[in-house]
Length: 267
Image (cartoon, rainbow, N blue to C red; front, side, top):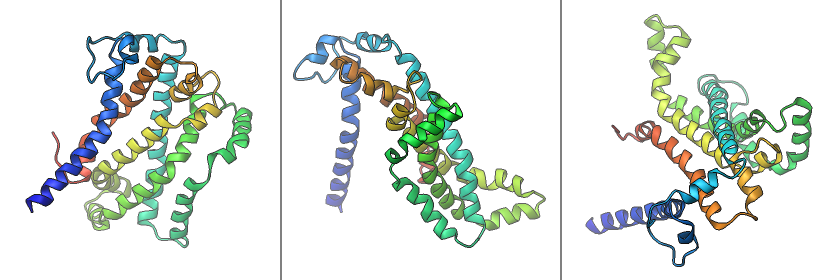
């Protein structure tokens, strides 16, 4: 039994190191001086601590604007995915209709459709609608990418909430809307938080649609891709660090909902 526990914790430690070490290396080099970035072997910790690399990165024309665009697009994607996905998931969970199983399969199959095939028609349509080179246009495409996951996850969430709880709320004088907000929604919050995180990260990391549909209103990933070949090594480390940090901070902010999803209490 002790040997099994030791193996379990050893594997968990290796997994943590595999995830954390690249992030730590990015952070270490992002807070180092330029000379340390080119040093070999790479230092394990910044000495001395410096903001030179990050300051130079943020002073590059267009970076601050692209960072703001990325945050805006990711926030809109998360909002749209929850506003559209949660009602669809609730309807699939609570109402029985012909073809419901087929509909869920079709929703999942949309993720298998390559976005590159739609590149030219999508760009032409967005130009016609005035959505080309706008954060809203990019957010709509990112919502389409995140929506199948949002629908299926919220479906499984609402299925797990007993219908009898809603019926009990109805007998106590609640309307269907009140029963949803007072009974179902609090129980589904952890899963909704996980769905929102997934939508945020999809949008934050996505680069193909952001590059295709923008010229001046670039997101950070699209801007970094356009500058990647001509950028020095410190710029790349700082850019990687800036890309990682917002997603980590967002996950940290909603961590208690994720913990409660797995039955773990968090303060």
